[in-house]
Image 1 (cartoon, chains in turn orange, yellow, brown, purple):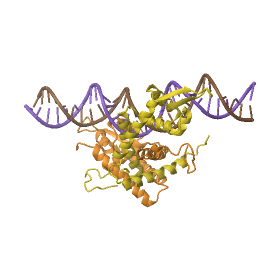
Image 2: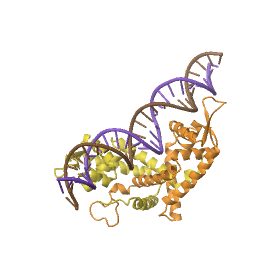
Image 3: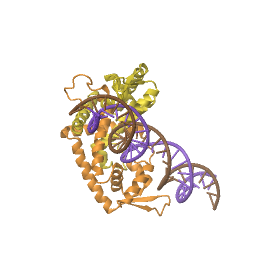
Image 4: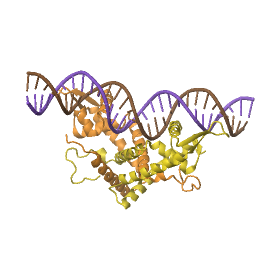
Length: 161
Length: 161
DNA sequence: GCCTGAATGTTCGTGTCACTAACGTTTACC
DNA sequence: GGTAAACGTTAGTGACACGAACATTCAGGC
């Protein structure tokens, strides 16, 4: 049901198909599928990468803190840490200074895996933006960032931690 | 991305936060939330709008055909039609010419509801793109459409019929 | 020091979108 | 007439994002 230029009669592309939110969601869906496919070839999914990257960027932390940094919900964090622990990519150690907390840290294996996921992700970006020139890619990124930033500031009345 | 001068200090934005696929997904997520919120104030969700709009655009059809036109999976179509039927926005009539099929058609109420959803959606677009100028909005739409078209043609090598 | 209130980790459940598998019925093709 | 396809339906999965509840542990006010 694609609408090639020569689609004459019936469906000249419904109006919602040119709606920014629709374009955004559809494009994001394609992007997500590309990313997910790339990740799943390494037995990972989005949350895994996000957690590993967050750990690599700002070091070991409690699950709650990691949730804040990565944007992963605390309850999803549990499962994510479980999975990564089972794969030995991450370590869960009780915090001696605060017995409520677990300290999550990257293992060496985890760092390796992160690197491979990152390569995968970079390759995916290229596939995703294939039809755009470098200038267009930059412009798209800028526009998206502007929109995103705007809405994050409007929804995130986040208390400093 | 934007490093607005006032970028919060703590986390200098992990690298995945500048990745096109990330920006796309996050922005789409905000968009989807805006849309969903707007729709849910009218007791609807995305599939409802898509089905109503598809019906309005290309007229009554079987569920399978509507699935093809709207991109809604056949099995989800069942639930969507159920819900809309229950709300009397749509009618499900057995096709006398083909007893496998149901013919789904818009009711008058359904047309009204569609109009209200459309108004909602239009308002949401404006909220979504608030930080962009008209030119920027058009450019963003174009870029997204380009990417989307490219990937739709690449993934949809679907046999027609 | 005690008590209250907050934070933490955890389990369970919800919602949306997308998609797969299976099944019975009905139609179409050869 | 028999096989293959299409149709509608049910049920289930997966990813992502949230909410509610709960027990344990810590921290601040008094």
